[in-house]
Length: 313
Length: 313
Image (tube, rainbow over all chains, first blue to last red; front, side, top):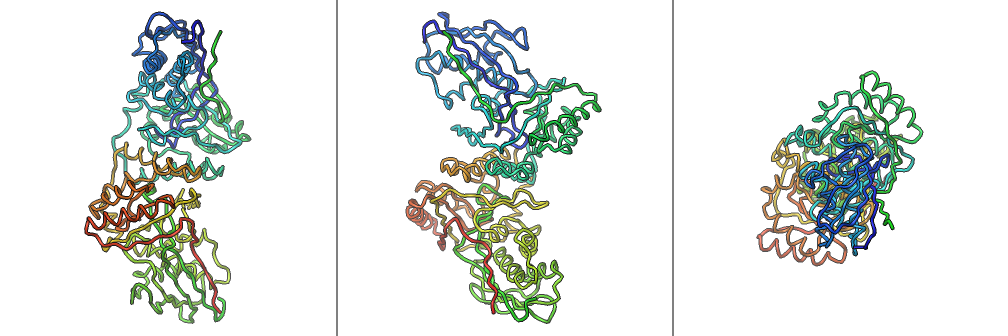
């Protein structure tokens, strides 16, 4: 414990799945960040301090609060002889499909980690942050947590033991995300999914992902766009937001390379060459108006930093 | 038609699926090649000439001969005003899971193509060679044909319209293939497959493929080995060769990065770092002996040329 010192950490929103990478890919989306200040306390365990930002209050119980749960996992793993009080500033909307719970978990894990005499590296910190994500979904999906922690595009190549790898991205791309005025709980979105899929769908899904990963490395946009779609999960979740089809058509017609749910929705992302950003945004706004759907637009560069940590005096 | 001239073409064996890439990946395997000499004829259509190599005879009907069917597809697509006689030299065993029918189809398509005034490029030649592969399986799988045509490791990123991309491979790897003394018909191997798979299997399969493709680009062998396995198809086809499990264990224990059926079997391939080749081969030979299975070993560099064409005077 660094006596008397506090730590401030922040972590970005993220786009889970990124259409073609259900439970496999996550893209950090630095249009919004959650921030956590961890202050050491003589009282063992974790306590919630000030809450600010998009919400006025958060649950104070560890089992219902992503930040507290992640913080406790870090303290326990380190065998820390002190407790922490966490101030949480929510910048990422909750239940939006923007990785809000993961951002809180990563920021809290990172802030508490900075108070340790021997902080964990990112790799061992990941499963501890996952314990925070477990509050919102059990078993917790990796995609948002790893993206929020590492930044950029991240692949979970293996879960046990974890094999997490950042991926390159073609240059000159922009990301647009619309957060419609709807809420979707991750658990409810999971419940929509069938336990089995046709073999042909599994093969075509894998084909799309293979092409997408190859395009991330080669930078070829035709290959990138060909792979950037979701035939596995999206059709099953369309009832959550039937308007998605019209929005996709608008986005792709205006030059987007792909458009789908962010995570389990209801937010929708589109990726496009920088010079198509304005056209795609305008076309999607027209489609939103036609569907009588109110939504907030966010944008951020594709290349971004994940966890940021600062030790306070 | 180049009056009086003939053309000789050859195409290599290939490893379909390459474990993790069912119907998506193919790896040319230049340990054996089929060769076709196409001689122009005043008689329209395609005729079988001399047959040599591993077999003494082949069916003379177009609908039962991969080489003739591919040749006819090329003549028809070109609107050629002449016929051809094909001499076929079989170097690739049939019904071995080594892409023998694809090698014949590609070699025949390539030889006839060379007789045209305006030959097709590789991309438009691919669907014509596929018409030869259709003789052995309908609908014809792409993996062997594209690998045999392009050489090296090849990804079918999209089927319609085709989007075929060569992939890089980590350096310093060797490939070993065992052809056991058994026969498996592609159609029979397909018939073993269930129409549906668990969603979790589809996701983990896609994850493996994503990691494998990333490793092909990055060269990281841990990632390569992690992805190079088949949880989608191999378990369903294990009854074709129950000995596979023991062979895999022997190969992986001796340092192989992956080991599975080549195509629909019964041949088995293993990839390994060059310096593990002898150890893997010895370990697999011990396992073959223990299983009382007779098999012929083949080896070839991973980087290889696909179709080779020579116009004869």
